[in-house]
Length: 254
Image (cartoon, rainbow, N blue to C red):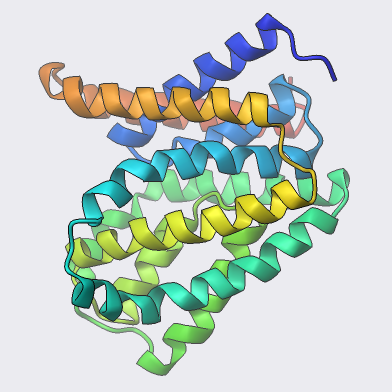
């Protein structure tokens, strides 16, 4: 497929807005898969691989902030990170093998799930439950393997699922859990991106354009949003509307 200036403008603009939303309200990357499949017309598996470029670039800032930690602090996090990476390897390999229709079937279901999650805002409940446990700790590794598998397969929403396990099963504080999440998502996303690239399922021109746009949008929001009253609420409202429209588009309502 020949990528025109119009395609790249659509990719950049949509990803830039997603970067702003992601910084202010979270889950902005949920929208980028719809941009890739519905607006740019990429097959599901290639859109899935291409999307990882932007997701990885979005985590660079968080990873850079975490890099100042001492080596011993890194070591204590790896028991929570390694199973996610292992699971992601298998999930990504499966994702490279599915057909467009199979991927889109899963994508449609997960978009509805993500809409519910965005409306419910489970992060508020997780903060209140921090330190409490709803499952035994021996389940941490098996559950994280499954989350890694899911993240390798489709990525979207994996952050909130991973955070829930760290807080509710591993019983870690919310702040520490967010730091671990940044490293884990960045690590397994890089692994997934390499596997997709090896399978020839990454359109680098589009992925890099969207990745740069997401990074710039996130940077802009982080540095200037505090000067705009109610910016986070506006971003959340845009996110809800965008995801609803994405769901309607995916189910051919319009």
